[in-house]
Length: 515
Image 1 (tube, rainbow, N blue to C red):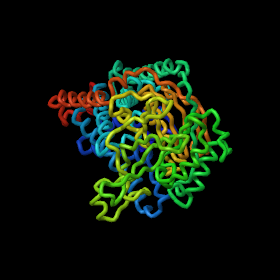
Image 2 (image 1 turned 60 degrees about the horizontal axis):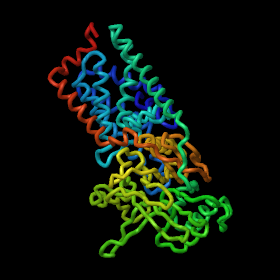
Image 3 (image 1 turned 60 degrees about the vertical axis):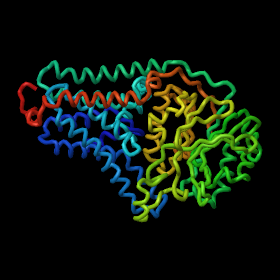
Image 4 (image 1 turned 90 degrees about the horizontal axis):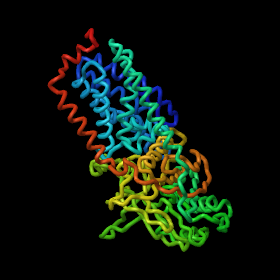
């Protein structure tokens, strides 16, 4: 129940003050825990409630591909069961390092931050709804991410929201006051820092660029059906031109048109007629940036590789650039342990035969009259480390194309949007986001929305492209050193305290009179 209540702190609810309750109860539970096993089970229960309440919406994808309906309970319950193990490990380690006083809050924060970091890395990683997103979903409180990134937000979130429990768990008055004082001063400092940063004037626009983002809100059961191909393309063209299709009149002054992930139920690079129709609506010098499935023949030409891509189409219907997705979704875009899974007769929940192939490196997308672009396809945007190009160049814009229609009008798309926006704040780089059914937006380097289309709506937004800021402190030191520092702090903390604290002493905490 405590973990489930904590999930109310996440988008779209954003009731972040309630996170005091689950963090406080976690500390009290560890105070009175009498074994590592008990701590492990408590952490697992906490994590299961948090992830079950925060990720239940994943099951809605199985209502679209009904042949996989049997697997819905595995997704809704199985994924939280597994993710909760990271919290369980954190609680068990904390049990061995526990001691009376405020020190235990710091220990708990360091260890849980480290396991959250590992959750984002192990088995390709899944940092969705990282604890730092409780602060990260507030525009003011999330500005500190430009300095410390998501890992730092994880640490501050745990430390700040766990600290008030000192007021009720301690006997000594001076120590009791530390908790609420740190809580209020910490949040106030973050809010003032964020407010001061957001007082900056609107970012200057990139000269000669006018964006149009098209959000078609195509039903997911139609999106991959070839029978709907012509109708979908016509809908895209009509919506993009404000209803003037086949004329390009409605595209006047637009230099860059952006469509969402895997926009078509066909291969764009193998469909010259479709490219010709698209070219008719593109004025001179205007380009289309669109998500699309790309195919490439295998060396022996026996089959094809399929890639989830972003492609650039010019006014003549020629594909001038293409980049492929690097970080694929397990079980959604490829099958981990494919040989074993094939033996049991399981298949991907996607249309491409054999699933997608991952690109080997994250290449920039080069677009005419447009800054160097870092492409983020779908859930790549939840990984802080994915905002670095393989050649070390700094992008001038983040481009996130996605299709969250699998999850309908649930909390999932709101959570995805908040995590993508945090990447812009971390890097000080604008984010252009095109989603099939929302949320699409033009976001400046501070995370402020210049234009937005709500979830489930069909429409377009026009706007200028904001310029990137100078490198933030976080973008200069990158996620790598911060991650290493977090692991180092955790290791030092464990080595420093092992041998000084025994499980026997931990069990006696609740009985001491000098707490």
